[in-house]
Image 1 (spheres, rainbow, N blue to C red):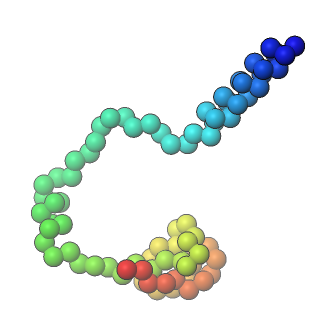
Image 2: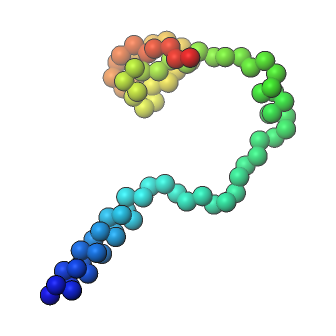
Length: 79
C-alpha cells in the first residue's frame, strides 16, 4: 500500500513538473542577420519615442501618446 502511494505521488509530481514547462527547447539553429541590415544599423540610428502603460499592461506599447487599451491609464514616455 505504501509503495502504491509513493508511486502515485511520484507520478503526480512528475506530471506537474512536466506540464508546467511552457518554454520550447532550443532547436540549435540560429538566424543570422543579413549584412545589409547590419550596415543600416551602424549608420546614425533614429530614436523613436516609445510610450508604455505605467502598470506594464501587455499590448500597451505605442509610438505616440494616448491611453492604455487595457486599463485606460495615460501612457508614459520611455527612453
